Length: 374
Picture (cartoon, rainbow, N blue to C red):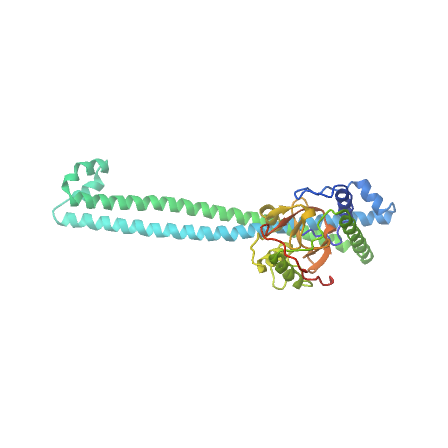
């Protein structure tokens, strides 16, 4: 999720202007930055308001960037786990092929030794010493069982060696892939930590009065944007959910008040995509782990077609996700220092929405009622 608490009121103001004029917002529309003049007009012309506006934008940008890096780290860490497992499997396969080569070599040596003891170099020994074993075998076809047995041993040894070469190459590729994933994860982790430190520095520089004013202002603007969008029919009222959607909502609402934790998937703490993925897992549907993967991999729906249980994706980089409850309200895990809570759907710039169960019909009946957000 964007680290935007207090969240920038600019995003909400722009979203109102955009969606009211075009209520059928495409599911894949990119959020558009708010022009500076519009933000200044909304904020007022006083020096104090301008400083407050700059602080809000700086905190919003830092939190958003930090969460996007955290989501990239979560995805890279998942890939690292998978690729390390693949590397271990490939290494085990290569080891098994080495054992088969050793067994084939042992059998070949046994047969050569037996032939030597029985009267000198037999067909198998001459086969291994021949410049072109295939020509030798052609000439020795009349020898019957000896040539046939020798050919089998040689082919088994060659096949085992070929499989060993292939398995060794696959093991090396798997190891390189795992190393690349580890490097990607470390870069994303370092970036996320640096951006989180920047966020904390910005918040530490603000007064308690400034933080309170920011929270009040962004809440009021987000609520106003939600009311205007509902009135304009920019997104669905969400009266009916699918059966699985109801279960996902019930799970998410039961987590209200639990703390945000980077990488958290419960049961005691969550990050934004950890909450949505676990909610739908509890509903019986597995979905991708991160917000970017959810946006890329799930069925997209227009905002006017939203129904409870759908996922709302935020920011152009799909850095945050929330679960839609209906009536312009979502439940989400905001950012470090906060808890799972309710919020207006307009809390951040909306990228679009996705549906984990597009083929499931909506069912009449009340969805679980949200509790007051703590």
